[in-house]
Length: 263
Image 1: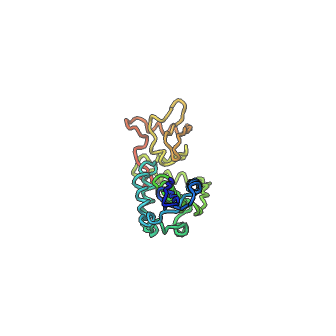
Image 2: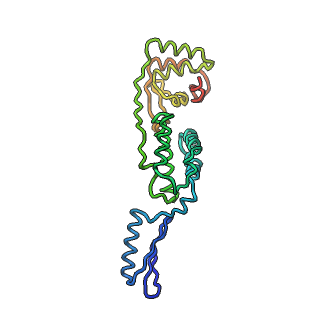
């Protein structure tokens, strides 16, 4: 917002934007003051005014990410995983930096450090969460960051195509191991996973109401990417599900994804 005031024989223009330092200039003619005010406002709308570095110096990376973790993450489907990732990042030295000192170089070094320990797809996911936190801070919280510090950081390649297939003898060994498991649902769950093939989270969330026995398909209302899908069921898949019928429970497999992972 521009304000124009007369001081003695001159006109002073002052342009302000929230989160930025005000800029001002003095003119002899009011027409020149009005023209500069309009031009400066247009420039501010396009590129912004000088950043108020004092406010950035008073907030750390941890302050920003903690607020994001506590207010934005709980509304996401993957809230538990994202909270775990953010908590781990908060233990890193970068989290203690003031926002005024944070640069792409810090995050590039973090990326390279993490690539020495975990897979590229994991690092890319971590950086994606942190980048979204900075984007929310810039666009919705009024934090005067000139740009997202991760915008210029190259994400690791996420080429994760899988072509692994069960080889001769492996299926029998897998089922034999399932039979030794104390959880009686592991064997049918593994068999159904091979027949469909569904993700672990999708399998444990199957409800009897989701199965259309007449059309021989299974409707999944909530998937990893957030979109529902319908899975056709083979004769073997139907036979596996038929063996599990006869209870009053809503879920076909009454267990958590962590129980499957531990088994």
